[in-house]
Length: 523
Image (cartoon, rainbow, N blue to C red; front, side, top):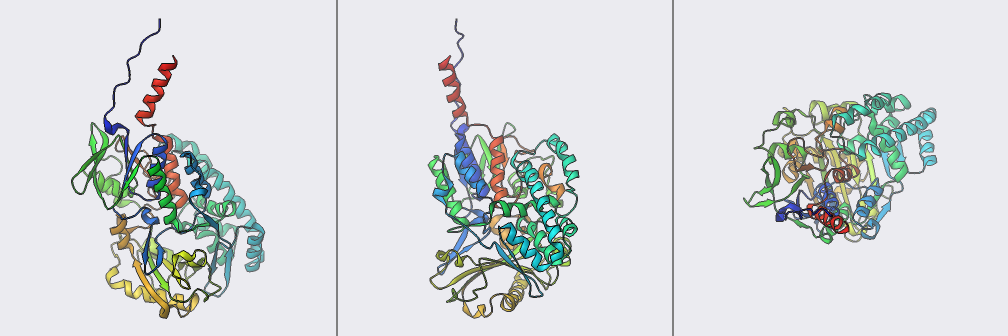
């Protein structure tokens, strides 16, 4: 005789509801992953548009992309869309960059990065013929670390200590204790090439002289996948994500701030807004900075690992000073200045020490300059240009912290002088629109602890298992996404946090009930 099973108990309305705090790229990617698992998702963000640090602002016809500007692993986005039954390339148009960027050194020499391996070898040989063989070894080192660090560790959960213990021998074999710069220095002797092969950790908030050499994998990423620009900026990717979330039945709520994560019976049960309203949910994902999540959103919860002291004592990524400006009638000027330029200052090691160790705002600087209007005319009025110039600076957590109200005009004048002399002469007279972000802006706009540009610095003892976990160690039912969790910062990193989260979050109760009902009917 067939054994009768009780029908599944009816669930509370919020049981299938998931709340995502923050509409940054990691939060939106998480919302998409949750929607694909049957959750009804509400994304809550304090800004007026999606994207978080990848959003944009528009002034006088100039669209300023505020944060990331390039896509280095488009396959990660395509995988995300495919998990939702969608086609990324139907929603977003990517344009390959050729060349990727040009580095300009103080002595007047240049290094142009491209995807073609033969062209890169020729570029290395042009600067330093004796380093050609060492560069080939570096590429092999980079590829090996890519397969282990990115495709293996970076795409699976690392919240169990055993996960770390299992990979320690390989970390040792690959000399993960050695810094990115130290590894580059073992392969090439020319200091310009050492810079060109080691500066990439700065794009994810890391000190090249202290961040683990696992991050040399970026060189293989660029070679294997190329460097791309999303037409409409990274903002266009964020908006396409929001459309997918809406198509799944979710919603994004703007101009709304979460004050606290609500707990019930020892689990995350929703959020309390600054307005006092409580929104209940079966699970919560925080795309807020991990430090803000633990010290503010869980301030009333006793914490074992991520205490206020632990968060304060962490090593944080550097701050950013970013000058966004538009220029009138310059589209045909500075023809040697492409989409991405890196203007290197006179010091490397000591300047990095000033930023990460001493907390000192130096007189000199190195700049990353973004000129998207050469690729995407929609970001500026016809005939004009849109720029941003970014300089790494100390975060706000040092005892000798920078008074940006006083220093900002002086720092902008120094930056202008460097740009005028080494990249875009005469630009100051043509500026029509401008705005500046300092670490204080990052603190106030993004609620980033100490105004850090990329959350916790990706040193070896702050990576993988050592980083705040994707599934919270402090509160069941709470998950983390974004730069402060595993695998880390940068566009591929934050999209990867959602991929890992998708492996940890169960399917929505409603979907599980439907499967159970189908199984019972079949029996």
